Every structure is written in C-alpha cells, then in structure tokens.
Amino acid sequence: MHEKHDELIGDDYQILPFRDLPKPYQMAIAWYMAVNGEAWTDVDYLGDAVPPPRPYEAMPHAEWEKLSRDEQSRLANEWHRSWDATVKERLEAALPEFCEHYGDVAFGVASIPTEAAKASVMQGEDVVSDWDGDWDRYHAWYVGHSDMPDHGRSDRWPCIMSSYETETFQDGWHRFHSYCRAGDADIPVVFYPAQRHLDAKLSAPALG
Image (cartoon, rainbow, N blue to C red; front, side, top):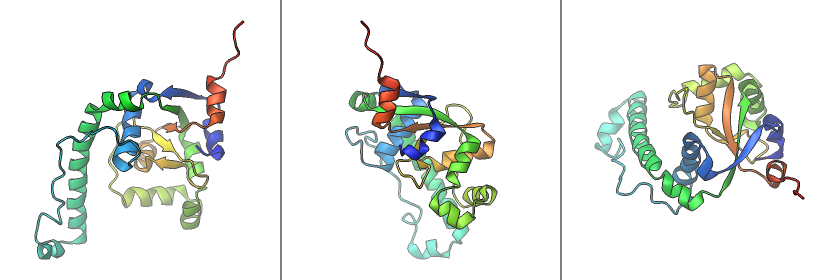
C-alpha cells in the first residue's frame, strides 16, 4: 500500500496470514490474484469448468448486429453474471488449496470510514479532471454506467488498497460504490503490508 494511504488506515489494522483471514477476505484476494490476474497460478480452481459461448458467439453475427446496444449489453451482463457465479463457486471450493499454497502470505486488514474513503477517491487524477471533486455526480455516473451488483450487507468482500499514490483502490471499485450506495458507514479493506506495517504490528520487545 502506498504510504499516502497510511493516513486512511492509521494504526487500527491487523497483519494476518492468508490462511487466518475471514472467508470473504480470502475470496476477494484469491479472485484478484487468480481470476483477475495471474499471480497465483498454483491452484487449478476451475477444474473442468468451461465458460459457455459468449452471446455474440452463440448467434450469427448478422443477428447479433440487429440487436440494440441495450439488448447486447443486457445479454453480455447476463453471461458475465452466470459465469462469475460458476467461478465463485469453484474458487470457494478451492480455498483450502489456496491456503496450502499461499497461507503464509501476510495481508493488512482494516476498515476505513466511508466519508474518508470518498474524499480520498475524489483526489484521484482521473476523478479530479473529470468530476471536479463532485462525489454525487461521479457516484451517479459510476452506478449508472457499470453492471454493478448489489453486494450484500453480510460477509462483505473488502476492497484492495492501491500501491499507487494516484488511486485509492487497486481492486473492488464495484464493491466500494455498492457499499456507498447502501449507506454503509465504513469500507472493509485489505492491503499488501510494507515493512513499516510489519514492523509496527509484528515487532515486540524481547522478553528477558
């Protein structure tokens, strides 16, 4: 996590190995590391699952082109939701194997007040240039222009803090906006701890 974001976290965080994280936190990290990215490749979480043809592949091109943009978007979103549900199920079943391979990897766990998270997001380069600090306009645009599911109030997946100064979150933007829309008072987060975080939480005076 970039040092600029330390002020959001303060001292109120824990350092935990992956195996000891709550399941929603394990899922968010495994999804980012193995599904969205290729950092964690030692676990074959998909097994024999094969994605169905995308909607534009399942019909003749001429028929697809006849559909309105809204209908194309609706079908594409349905496909993504269906396939994501399959991936999530397989990923959750593979968590013990992820713990076996990556259980010792340390992560920071914290919670950020929603208003502080909003203020940080509004300082991002793209957001400043496009929205001039107007959270309500930016949030309304994001919610209206993305296929954003309504993330539940229980077992919330955390957002992943960014290692870059110019952005607040590295992953979990849909979740962030969903929690804001729901009026949540805080945003659960995880981060890759730097040595300063490890020293602050894991160092202890020697007994003797």
